[in-house]
Length: 99
Length: 99
Image 1 (cartoon, one colour):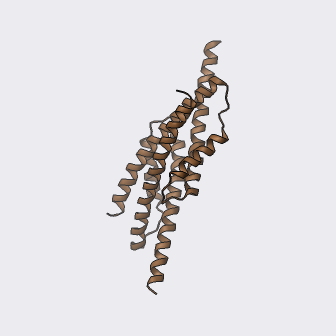
Image 2: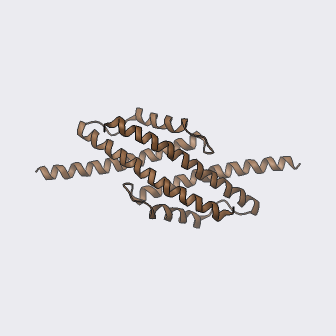
Image 3: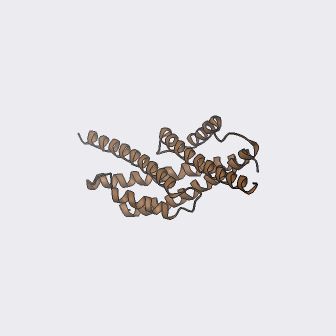
C-alpha cells in the first residue's frame, strides 16, 4: 500500500470520527436539557474524571494515555460548549415565548 | 431517559472514538514509515488542508465546522506526534543494528 492508499483509509476513519463526535455532542445536549430543567450545573468535575478513566482504560494504542487524555479534554470541552450554547438558546426562546 | 442513561451512551461512543483514533494513528505511522524510506518530510500542509476539508464537508452537526476544525487540528497533531516518535525509534534501532 502506498501513501495515497493509507490516506483514503484515514479519510474514511475521519468521517466515522466526525459522526461519533456529533452523536456524543447530541447526548451532551440532552443531558444539558435535563440539567437545565432540574437546575443543575453544566460542569461536573467528577464526571469528567470518569470519562477520562473510561477512555484511558480502553486505550490499546498506538496513542498513549496522555495523548488520549489530551484529545478527550478537547472533546469534552467542545461537547460542553455546544451543550451550553444550545440549551441557553432554547431557554432564551422559551422565556421570550412566555412573555 | 435520565442523565445516567445518556452517560452510558456517551461512554460507549467514547470507546468507539478511542478505537478509531488509534486506527487513524496506525495509518499515520504506516505513512511515516513510507516517508522515512523515501526521504519525504512528515509535515504536509496541503494534506492537512485536505483532511480539514474532508471532515467539515461531512459534518452534519450539532458541532459546527469551527469545532470540528479545532478537534481535528488536535487529532492531526497527536497522529503526527506518534508517527514521528514511532518512526524515529524504529530508525534509531535499525541504525544501531547496522553498526
